[in-house]
Image (cartoon, rainbow, N blue to C red; front, side, top):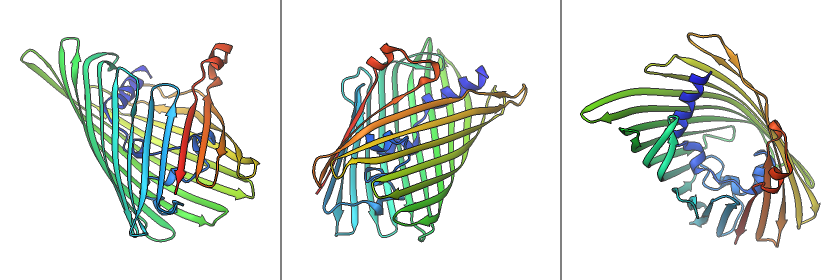
Length: 352
């Protein structure tokens, strides 16, 4: 178990996630445990961009109470086509993080191009401290709305990590591939249900140099995800459900070939407390115990993990909306100090 988790953490530290880096999410969407999709969800989204509701311009910003935020805007070009730009990064942290993304959607197609950088004088990775850490990468994603029932996307990315761990100069290269197929079984105004099949591949080549001696190792992680999404709306009430089963295959030099089965379920809803003024959002994300199958060891199971979300949406007028939410993990108990230092996210969207 410890060996598997070490490899997973190494992979996470090395690579960018092509899906998350380009995604935008409001505090309202997060407050429903990422189930009730809103206007912001469709921004910079190569499969849902045509569901955006705005006249000429839509701007969005999301700030949290730690150290990061983002700013994005989309604009109509030639009345139908959509051009978008977004930035995400930290504002007052010693570690530098910035991600820039450009978007263009037209007819049945959409394309995004992203550049992301991490820089830190000290970064924890490979169970040690990496000094002078630099991680630079880019990725592109293409979406195609095949017809009313099917949509597909493909993403490619590359990143490079340099730094120094103890006496070793490191030089890691990581290549990512993302693909997804969506089947819209039901796509009505008040009821939507779709099935998803996704693939996420990370391939890392790691070089470490000590003096004149260089060693090279290779690792890979392939994830196949089966999922389903449901969204129901009735008057002042909206309910969302997401379910997914990611199956991960990890292999590499000097490690066993391991397989992990994860089981995730999210439920959330949004209810209008005061028409056109105030909404309450809440939901729960449940991670059921994972199953770990090891090549040369006994299988293991993980733990049950739950995150609860809650927040409000304030509609200031027909054009501006402010969302606020927080998440709580009661798995190890909750203290008054936990509640006092609880982090909050706040987002603002305005359409013109």
